[in-house]
Image 1 (tube, one colour):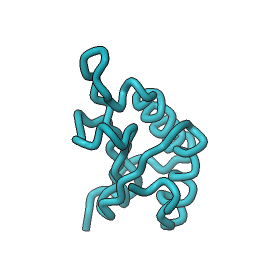
Image 2 (spheres, rainbow, N blue to C red; image 1 turned 90 degrees about the horizontal axis):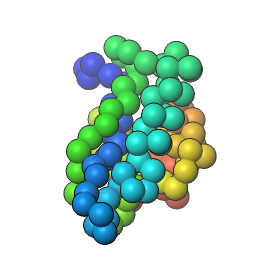
Image 3 (cartoon, rainbow, N blue to C red; image 1 turned 120 degrees about the horizontal axis):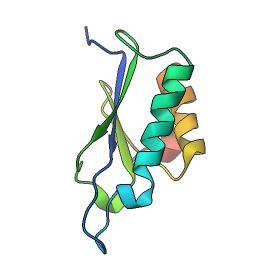
Image 4 (cartoon, rainbow, N blue to C red; image 1 turned 60 degrees about the vertical axis):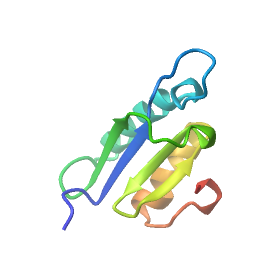
Length: 102
């Protein structure tokens, strides 16, 4: 059994100016939002959900991106409304958000 029910990694990589990267598209803000929401919802910790920053996940052209384990589902998102939908639908209710899946 996995230590966490869901382990979410947000690419927060920062590349030099002029190069495509997730952090230029709001990844750090989105990761902070997700981490705070999971904490507010009391879903943080062993057997629950862990939200982490990651270095480059090598999908810059599809960014910003995050990946949810153990399901290995990759998402792209635009704003915190998309992140909230991933939290509610995938992390809480176990339904992949097809419109955001990459």
